[in-house]
Length: 159
Image (cartoon, rainbow, N blue to C red; front, side):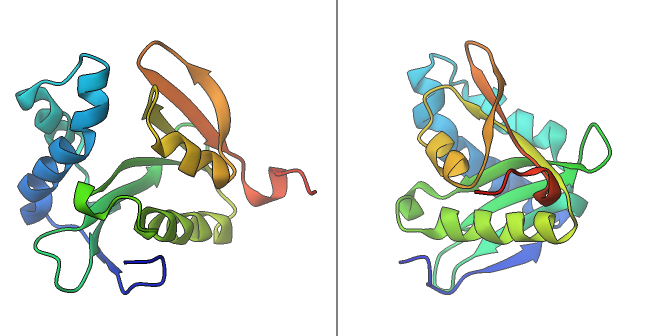
């Protein structure tokens, strides 16, 4: 699969919760284990507790069994800011350009609306490089999480 491979986003439903909780567990396991924070129950429960299908999209790839990924993009904090969260891809699809393509589509929506985007990523996660390539910069960090921010299009410096 390449970034130009066929994929679609569809609105999430309540029925997607458990498959997405399983997807989260598989996608986050390596980073959480590296940080000594993997817990079979908690990794799933955190998604269950925060799941908002009205802000969540499911990534589908023809021929791929189950959801290929998901992401949520919801209003957050200060007006004019979105929170990108629960962005997971099935580990079998990592490194093939799908994450870049899905992220680019989400950021195009935010840019079209003139909105900034915030997110957090686990310390040491390779996903941080993906976000930084797309204009996210460090906002703050702690021993577990790195908080990144991408300004709204009008706030970004021109080069």
